[in-house]
Length: 412
Image 1 (cartoon, one colour):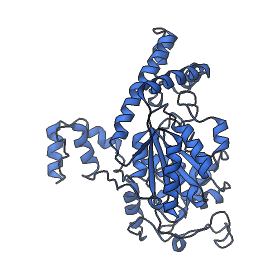
Image 2 (image 1 turned 180 degrees about the vertical axis):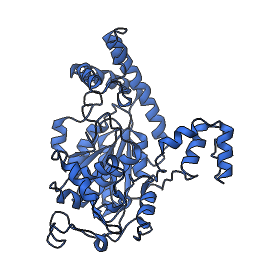
Image 3 (image 1 turned 45 degrees about the horizontal axis):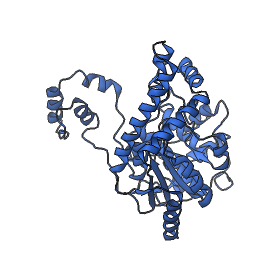
Image 4 (image 1 turned 120 degrees about the vertical axis):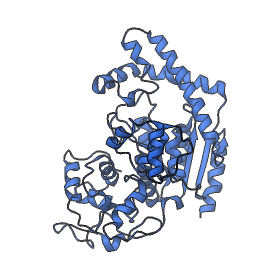
């Protein structure tokens, strides 16, 4: 895994993507290697998600020919875009990469390039073994994941909507450098707070990580408390197309009745909540398409770490004290000075400092607010995860080991 690349890596990637001919494809890993950073396929994926949208990113696929969930409109949107160029796509969203792969004239030949073996498989990520650990904040998920990873030769994929951001370390209880050195972690520090990531983009990056970890003979372990991110991966969410902000602005000026009339004229079914302007707007933006999800794969084991309320309260209080001792106030000041009070910082552990910095709240009250808001968030997490009947709830590491051992034996 490569997290740091040369300063002009993005420019080289975008220049190469611009050259891919119609009807041909390149892979993320291939592009990374040709741009001098073999092993940085995931970085190329990040550039694809956040880079120049005018480039033909539809011609970039995963190493086995799989289409990208993070493409505007998800895999279906990617399929439509590349099929418009005459490329055939299988029912499970794969292209014949060995036939379509394109190499620049001045690059090494396909046969001699050793940076990424180009093979074809129709095995989607949902058929790969995956361990998932969920639970409330401060419940001990990360510690359990570390033990499981060390015991079963695994690597951790962080499913947290805030640990993706660089510089947000103390306030998010991001895994320590020591833990990251002992067990490889994925999807930490992949963007900055001023460049937010959404669930669709996270899903694509997580899928890439799952495939990468599995290809190296390791066990992928998805761990976190952001319910939407977890569900997007394990239920293979097919997200609706990304909204056009200009169209959204026009629709925001329309009344509920006008939105309903517009839908009827376009022969688009009214959403279930036909009086909600937001739901009506999304129906118009997506032409009636709905976000889809698939059943949980039999190859996925989801464990939920349960904890008594009193114990969780004690852990939240103790963790908050540690955060303050580790420099949470200084970290928040630095982030606010760099980015201002942007959306990414309007979250627990940071937002509570706003009145303190303004001089209207004491530091002790700030700490109390963080504890209170953290416990409220834990209740919301508990409600979210309780809806998932596929979760096997456990209270001890021993239970997790037994379930995972049985699960892995069935995979053989």
